[in-house]
Image (cartoon, rainbow, N blue to C red; front, side, top):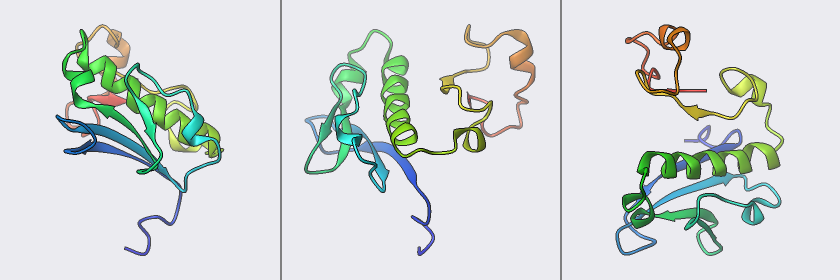
Length: 130
């Protein structure tokens, strides 16, 4: 457990609290200066001063026209806040360098044929790539 927070971290997940149906959350540790003021997206997401994390109510995702895109936007936006404000070495941390991450699911329009070939079925991260 000593090593759990030995480096900066951006953490996210689902929590049954924060709203009537639960909420998605995202936080950075240590929290970089300016994190709470980051222009978080999408609409409906906000920073909770008490919890010290961004919150996106489940209902905002559930009722969205494109729930996957809404959730991904939240996760990407909060990661960007941590990485940019924390001065992270994104080239060393992310596939493809410092370009923003995008959801790329095998078979979706997000991937062209060449990109699809680069994610073999045995790759545990084949559905999510940066």
